[in-house]
Length: 309
Image (cartoon, rainbow, N blue to C red; front, side, top):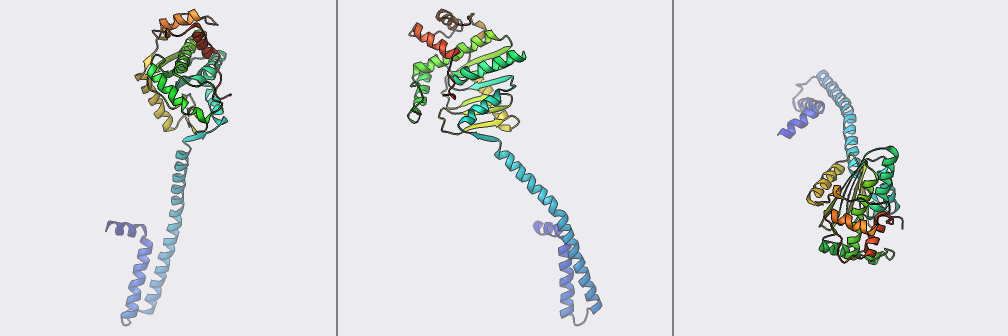
């Protein structure tokens, strides 16, 4: 009943015309001359007029319907473009764009190789040139957790078969060195730029994705370059969701007290690095030889760009 009433209200002109037409028609046919010809002709004009009004009303409503349809289409397109797929060199270019003019960088991932190789050096260099503050928050695998490092190494090896040029085989020892190197790099760059507000958080959860978030965008990447990577622009709801997610993840990880770091020279020595990690309450394994520590130093300050291979 409600639908019928609503239909009649929306199409009043047509219903009115149909009612008059049917009434006059039936009376004219079955009413035994109850309806004069002049009255029938007048009723016909009324019906035609009502139909004309209905046609005009429909034309008036049509642009509004078109506008509503266009607005719905626009919203659908915005939803589709909320996330952009990245492949191949697009990842490197997206990361480069994300670094431009940013005053913050939040990272969550395995061991932070690209962070050490490109992100930290270039962001610190830009902050020095512009005399600006830089806020960096890092969450990586805990190098003191042997079980987590072994699980991470196994995960990375799963993709080695499809990457014949992937370089060194991932082992638990390598994962530990890479994570130690990121902590060392954070301490070293912190001493090079007084306006650098940097924090490092260690997690025992094995990550399968990497998150790089700047002022302008969030980039989600994977270890396997053949798989799709994602970019989310700032201003999209998904950007804010992950901003909160990364914060909560850091809250559950173990923070490294970088303020306790000992001084490092421009070219840190093995002894300086050992003393640094002792001061951070994150001592290097006793099995680490001087050569191992030297490898950590090289990875920290001279890491190879994984996207430049």
